[in-house]
Image (cartoon, rainbow, N blue to C red):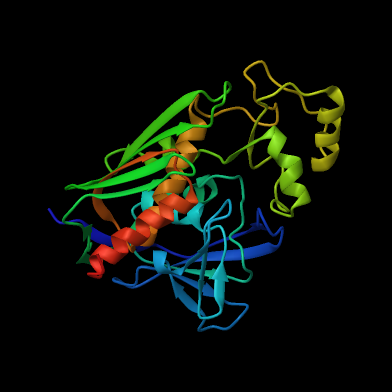
Amino acid sequence: MKQLQQTLRKSYSFEGKGLHTGKITRLTLNPAPADTGILFRRTDISKDSYMEAVAEYVSSTDRSTTLTHDGISVMTVEHLLSALTGMGIDNAIIDMDNVEVPILDGSAKPYIDSVWKDGLEVQDSPRKYIEIDREITVTSEKTGSSIVITPSDRLSFDVNIDFNSKVLGLQSAHWDMSEDYTKEVGVCRTFVFFHEIEYLFKNNLIKGGDVDNAIVIVEHPVSQEQLEHMSKLFDVPMLQRCENGYLNNLSLRFPNECARHKLLDLIGDFRLTGGFLKADIKAVRSGHTINTNAAKEVRKLLNGKI
């Protein structure tokens, strides 16, 4: 039985600050006709400022994925693209009145909570899967990361993470389209190490970060003074390091939530191949740079450039 394309039943709007810019964006997910794919539209630029969500337009992977084309940029697209993929949405137009997708709770859960209860609109066109005829391997000597993409009759992802962290340890996560993305992957939040936060703030990299949208890993011993400083930085009551090595701002949804979030990111970045890929994707120590480089290699193969 052929899988038909799907879109949203109606429009859904979200508003919040961007993690990196701190700018408030109003974002609206809209239904789209069959064969549209995923399009971003910067409504603050013009009503015709469309940009396709494809890997050729990746312009930055500094802690998030940014797309730029013909003077249009959209930052931090990975959580939203992951949500659309995990929910099985082929076609959507995403209106934004600013440059960065809002971080919301640091996962794809807000999109799921809004869209999933209404179900999806099934369209009268078969899904056009992306198929490859050979294995693709992408590696990075600098980070020790790798991604292997193997032709398959389905889409599946396996992720292994290793941050040389005693708190995180070695974690892994798996997802394929037979599993419930909305419960197992989409709810998993982004994470950051405590010792990174001050550096990121000083370099204007997380202007929209707060303790409600990130798991904080306290890898090294910290003083009461450091905790007080962090509490003031985020303007929240006194923070503490829990026995499991995480800050007490959030409770984990899964023991391996950090690996599951890396899986969420990988799914979102791989949507930049242009659709639903039929392949087994195995990633080790992955991040946005190698994710999007691998998506570019798939696009090159499809376009006969390799």
